[in-house]
Length: 183
Image (cartoon, rainbow, N blue to C red; front, side, top):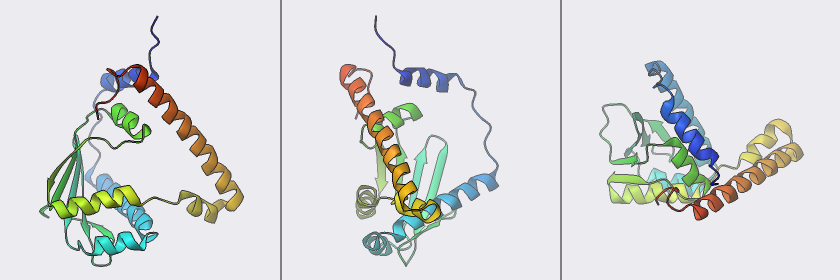
C-alpha cells in the first residue's frame, strides 16, 4: 500500500477551496508598503546590496504570480520604493508555477521556483545576486525584542524544524520523482 504525502492532501484542499474575493485596493497597497519596508530593512543590513541597487536607480521591477503583482523601483540610495501602476517595468519576473504547495515544496528543497524573466538582462543579474546573497538576520532583530538567549533558542528551534521539513521533502521527492516538482 502506497502512503500518500500530506502535500498531495494540501494540493487537493487548495484546489477545492472557492476563489476568495479580491481584497480592497487600500489593503493591497498597504500590504505592498509593508513588504517594501521589510525588504528595505533587510537591504540596509547589507551595504554591498544597497550599492548594487543604487546603480539601478529609477529602474522598475514587476513581479507576478497568478493574479497577484508587485511593482518596485530602485531609489538613488539603494533601497526600494513602490512604483506606480503607470510605471513601465524594466524587468518582469513571473512565477510560472500556479500551485502554492508545489512552490513551497520547491523552496523547502532549497531550490528557487521557476520564473520567466523578461526585460533588462543587467537588472535581472542584479536581482538574482540580491536573491542569492542577501539574507535577513532574523535572530538579530528578535534579540532586540526578547534578548539574545531567547532569540537564539527560537531561531535554533525554527532551523531544526526547517531542516526536518527539507529532509522530508527531499526524501519524498527522491522516492517519487514523478510526483516531485519539475525543476
